[in-house]
Image (cartoon, rainbow, N blue to C red; front, side, top):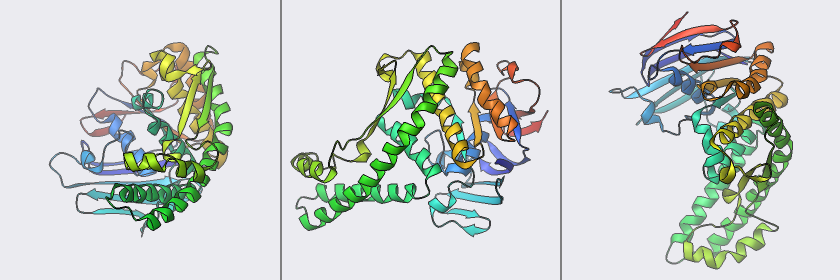
Length: 358
C-alpha cells in the first residue's frame, strides 16, 4: 500500500500542492516551520480523518482562507481516489467519486502509523490516550469495532444527559443502561482479546530499541471487574451524586509496566520515549500481519531524539517496509537526518510551503 499522489489546497502553509510519490523511503528535508510535518499531517488526515496533533479542522486552514482541500490517490489491493473539503459551513468526503456515508466503510482505504513527539502522551498522559490507541488499532483491524464504539459512546452521552436532569426518567435510564451493558460487554471482549496478541510485539520492539535493556508488559485493566450490569447498578447512588456514568469501557486503562513497575511513574524520559516508539512499531507490525501489507509509516523527526543504539532498533522496521515495497515518510533537518538509512531513498526539499525533489 502506498500514497501515489497528494493534492493540497489552502492546507496549513500550502496554498497549492500536487505531488506524486513512489513506494519507498521519502525523506522530507528542511528547516523548522517550513511545512514538513504538515505533509505528514495531511497523509494521516486522509487515513484517519483526524490530525495527529489533536487539533480540529479550523486549525488546518491556511491563514485568511475559508476552507482546505486534501486529496490523494492510494494504491493497495486496488486504486482509490480520496477527496476531502472542510470549512466551517461545508464538509465533504468522497471515495472514488462517491460520498462516504459510513466511517467504517472508509477507514482502511489508507492505513498509516505515525511516530511523533505527541506519542509520549501514550506513556505520560491520561488513560484516555491509551484507550484511543487501542480503539484505533481495533478500528484498523476489526470492521465492526468502530460502529460498536460509536453506539457505545452515544449511549454514554445520552445516559449522562439523563443523569443531569433534575427529575430523571427512570424507564429511559433503564433502557439506556441495558444498551450500555450490551455494547460495553462487546467492547471489553474485543480489547481483552487484542492485548494478549499485541503485547508480545510491543515487548519485542522495546527490547530491540533498548538493546535488551528494558522489559515491557501491557496489562489491560477494564473498569468492569466481573459483571457489568451488577456493577452499574451498584454505582447508581454515586452516579446520582456525580451525574455521570461511572462504570464501563470508557473508563478502562491500559497499564504499561516497565520491569513490572508503572512506566508513567518510574520510567525515565528516555525510557518513556522508547516505550512510545515501541508501541508504534508494534502497531505497524500488527497491521502488516493482519492485512498482509505494511501500513504507510509517518516519522516526524523522531530519529533525531534517539541515541545511535536506540535508533538502530528502529531500522529493521524501516528495512522491512523498503523490502516489501511499502512507503515511509520521514521529516528531518539537513543536520540531523540519520545517515545510516543509506542513499536508497527519495529526498525532498521543503521550504515555505513548497516541495521540490532533490
